[in-house]
Length: 275
Image 1 (tube, rainbow, N blue to C red):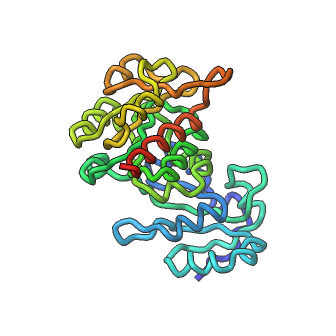
Image 2 (image 1 turned 120 degrees about the vertical axis):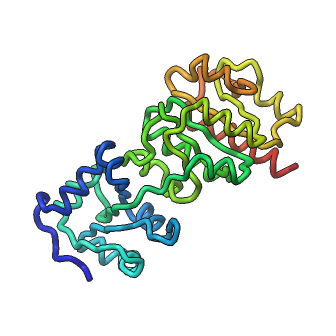
């Protein structure tokens, strides 16, 4: 049954949800917020070990009318439905113009050991990626390219940051995501699983076009992506089997992180599918 309308932003339920904007509270409760109909729909459809991912849903009267099927699916999946005022949802939301739906979800990260045990062929490793929008967008690119997993190192942003969740456009719920893995452990584990590790860096000695022409891109591959502003540290580059740059054929100074990631992941995906 739905709870009564939550009028006050100081309600205990609202206060608990609001705290999930902070990483420490997310980590403590292993809960995060998913905002908007796209993210909520993916959360409703997602389960882990037989347990629903969506635990609670805050919904305004207007959104409940526009997304009645989604609210019904959430209720059928066992989520606690809170018919909330516009002020309550606005207080919880991370966007300027909330869409009236906001879910509280369980963490859904996958142990790194499970990622490598599955024999992945294409993996994105986010090392030193601090911007949540970039992290979410790269996760979305990896999903679109058909990657088997995304690994975020312990030096990277929390993928459950509201901006990262929103930038992933639902892809956070689509593929295994390992979190907090030291980059040395990530590289060693992937290499032990037979995965070639490539560091994407504008100063790389190897060229993506040359790699494609040489026919080396059809092997199982993990791409390591770094911070957009300063790239990958020398120590991280040294861990890789090769440091590869995306060629710049025009006059652009560089590519942003998400664009470079999309180019690299799709190059691997095409080579693997052709093979």
